[in-house]
Length: 370
Ligand SMILES: NC(=O)c1ccc[n+]([C@@H]2O[C@H](COP(=O)([O-])OP(=O)(O)OC[C@H]3O[C@@H](n4cnc5c(N)ncnc54)[C@H](O)[C@@H]3O)[C@@H](O)[C@H]2O)c1
Image 1: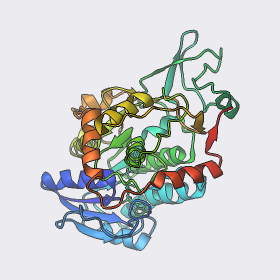
Image 2: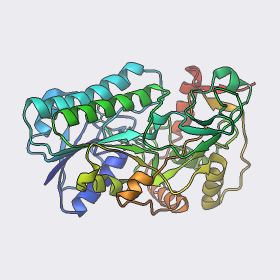
Image 3: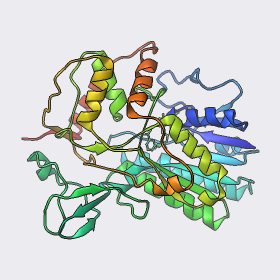
């Protein structure tokens, strides 16, 4: 069986490629080696020799059409995932690329048996909350005026009381930014066209995936890469809001197992799955784990800065993927330890965060509360 992995030179894609090879599948990678993840635009050394590598853009119809020849299964990871207000780029690459993939399969009668799409927990926006007066709620983005007042928690849209986050299942989406909208649209293209043309399709809504090869050249997001690079340069950690935001973290090897599982299981067809961690950690708790493992003793300062559009808390309900036979097995400590071992073997660990933060400030994404 031959598998095409778009974005297979990237982080989740490359770990999925490794597992596919280990399980005896033939693999072809299609990737345009985009900066900042690939600053020299060369094929990374970790792409194994037995992989057939095709360099090309997901929006290049002719090259993608060639890459799809002789393919049984497609993993679609290639995506634009910045934090900047270049809204149309998200739509062109993420949604245009996904629509093109199905267009080529359908128009050329290609015998692709399954497509697995990389979606994101971002499609939930703030996710699900429980109000003690009004029950389950799917709140909107916190207004700028609320955040400027250091009023961080999510309030009930009916009674304005502060609410508790609860595990969010796959039933309802509520995207709040351009990336999340593009991921929702990608899912719609994939699942609707898949169903319409009998191409079994699965969408994976990953939470924060972490591990070696997560490029530190892209410093717009990613707590582990940003915090560890700052600490390696003895710089203070950029902790937004009050550091109490809840997030889950999943080891990239566990995510790769989830990917291959849904590929192999027919019951997964036309389904959407959350891929979440074993429990939620606050940003401060996460920072302390990192400080401890790096042997650093610095004070954690809250500057009052926040990123407008960030989610306050988000926790995934994992029961659907668990029923299919998957569990996350790697602890956050193990993930951080492995990332630190990896990053210290890298030839050039410049502080790309400083530049990214400056750009986000100029664009009004990072702001300071009064
Ligand atoms: N890493 C996470 O925590 C996370 C969380 C949720 C969703 N996702 C999704 O998972 C997928 C993979 O994410 P990742 O963290 O491995 O990203 P990554 O940036 O490490 O890898 C993406 C790869 O896609 C390639 N690529 C980008 N644009 C392309 C284009 N136009 N044509 C061809 N190739 C292109 C890049 O060169 C890169 O090798 C993405 O779709 C992302 O939205 C990731």
